[in-house]
Structure formats: structure tokens, C-alpha cells
Length: 267
Image 1 (tube, helix red, strand yellow):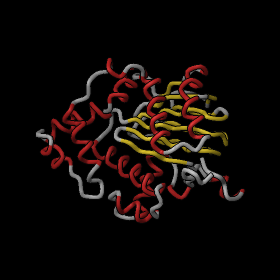
Image 2 (cartoon, rainbow, N blue to C red):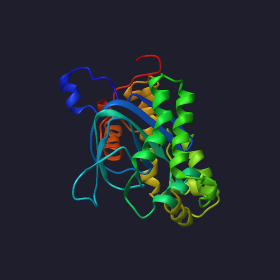
Image 3 (tube, rainbow, N blue to C red):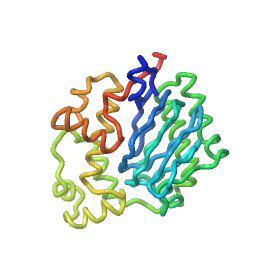
């Protein structure tokens, strides 16, 4: 994920090279990916090897397994060791159309390992673009193509509730402000109880858990663009840097200081 500055930092670094976020998803591509302790998060995760296999462990497995590709459902605890390789991790909103297609294909399992052929086919374009230092727009395009390949035809997936989709879109624009469930429910003309029920059904997680995830992802993307960690945390709505650090450990399994960035043209 990142070039490691020295041997001491390498032991604890689980850094990332590039982070790109779009409505409904994101991609984290990096080198020298290390171990990420057990954690769980709101988004559906797809991890694809770009160079060298990685090791993954799910709570339902007695031992870790080697893989070239995997899919982790929302809020499922898992542990990943990149084995110092190059890895692309894609996060998909469960409420999005690709997210619904992934839930349709992989639902009922906490972690699914992809075959060598499917992993390779899904990762090939993304690998080529990353190694050629492609623009952010092009790298995101190939990341979304990889998601669609694994999800299958998203047009056949169950439709998402447009009220929850609208609520998520609105909240993404206001992450730095105070967001309360009752206010968001009113925004989309639902009672708080009905909104809470629909939100869990559509996203697979609670309102509070989604909000922490969205803010953490927003802050990390802002830091990748050059903001300080403190400023990135403030702009994402965290009370302070300590709150941001605790949230990162909870949803990503790592502290933000364990991330190092490389930007387009800086390799």
C-alpha cells in the first residue's frame, strides 16, 4: 500500500497507496500491505490481489486461508494480512445497486473466497491501470468495472428503496454537521421507526454505524488529497482527532497514522 520509510514503521504499517471515493463505493489500492487486525464495517468489501496472495480469516473458520480474491459481507468480522503484497480493496454500499447484487450472490456467508480465475480476471485491468499510474478518474472506472464483474448483472438485483438512497445521498453532503436519525427521517417523509427499520434492511447496519463509517471514509479520502489528519477529521464531523482514531480502529482495524499515501505521479 505504501512505500515504507524504515523497518520500525514497516512492522506496524498497514498503509495505502491511493484512495478514491465515489457515490456508493471506494477503492483503496496499495503496496506492501501488512496485517489488519480483526474488524467489521458497514460496507461490503472486495479484496483482490494485484501481486502475491493474501491471508484472510473469518470468525467461522478455524484457521486463516490464502486467497487471491474475497468478498466480505457487511458487518462481518474478519482479519486480513496482505503478506507484504499489492492489494486492491473495494468498498461497496450495500444499499447501492451493485451492493444489492453482491448481497444476492454472496448473502448468507460472512466471507467468500473467489476462484483464481475470477480473481485474476477481475483484477487485471485494475492492476494495469495502477501500475501505469493512471488518472484518478480512470482508476476509479476500472475499480467500478471490477465490482460489476464480481456482482454480476446489477439490473437483476433487488431494487433499493429510493427513500434510503436519497437519505444517504443527502447525509454524504452534510457529514460535517450534526445528523440525527429523526431529522433524516423527516427529510425523506418517514417516521423515525419506519426509517430505522428500512435503513437496517437496506444497508445491513444501524444508522449510527453507517454514519461513523461514512465520516471515517470521508476523512481518509480528504487526507489522501492533502489535508492534515486534524483538518480531515474536523471536516468529516468528528469531535476531535482522538474520536477519529477510535473510529478508524473500529471500522478499518487500523489507526489513521498507520496509513501512508502515494498520489498520482509521485511514485
